[in-house]
Length: 99
Image (tube, rainbow, N blue to C red; front, top):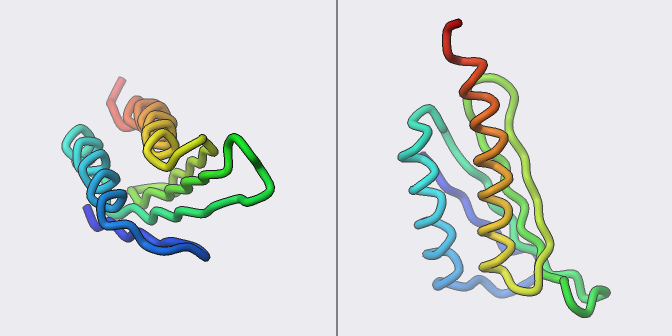
């Protein structure tokens, strides 16, 4: 799976990129039909507690899958977003299986 990580209006972080890549590779092992993932990190300065935003868009056969989350730090946002993607992929996998 091809992973593209972008930081919107903020400095890039090597450790955050590595953490995100590791989590997405686990997801790719679970679902071998994933093609690519676009990851966007943003920071909302208007929110005091939860201003770290993570958007992920997965390319796969059929319509793309998108998830986003806002948390107090980026690691939690990544974890929450990947959990949301996993739920969507489980549903998508059920449509692939023959009845």
